[in-house]
Image (cartoon, rainbow, N blue to C red; front, side):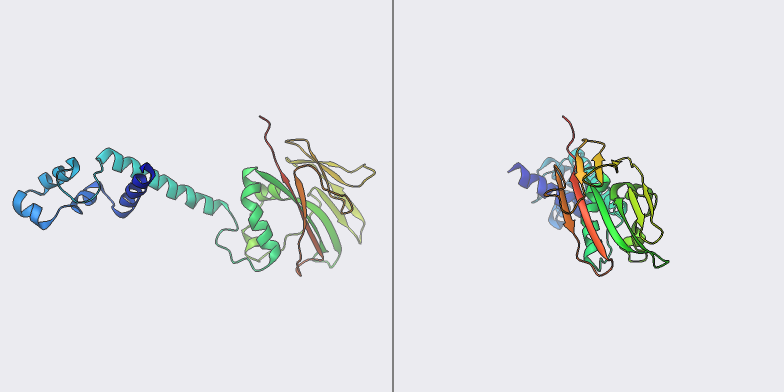
Length: 233
């Protein structure tokens, strides 16, 4: 019952700009005829002696008004923070990134994106991108808007140019690179110290991790590795 009351009050503060507007909505022309005083009529509504609607004190109205405004600003702020918000995502790869954006920004998860494709010089390149780190250091709106293509760089977790045979690896705030390993490239999550194995032949990429190949015409190959980060309690 209390929840229904709260919902009604929330509707009231959304509908009326001021507490006076709310009181006036419950004053009838007959009330004004007999009372001949608008302020007195408002006081009687506030006290519950007049009006057919819900009785709501000024303090409660103002408190709920502030809470509603805070909620509105919070949603607006989140929409601004998410680069994918409001974008028409035309392919599966961008939709897959959009689904993971909030989780990577908030720290709930860390995704590593493997991309293999050709650069502007038509050289085949591949690499592993720390999505959460890139989101914090780069504006992703052009990517989600389709104005830029996401490609690995020599500064990413791992990068390889198949033509020049240039190879680089770099730690990020989220992952340590373990390159000298018999089973291939490994990434250690710095928060929970779990190992993520990107070998496609491995039975599993690791604890709390998943491997998702992305079917896309935009790249030669795309695979996303998601690691759910569990905080130590």
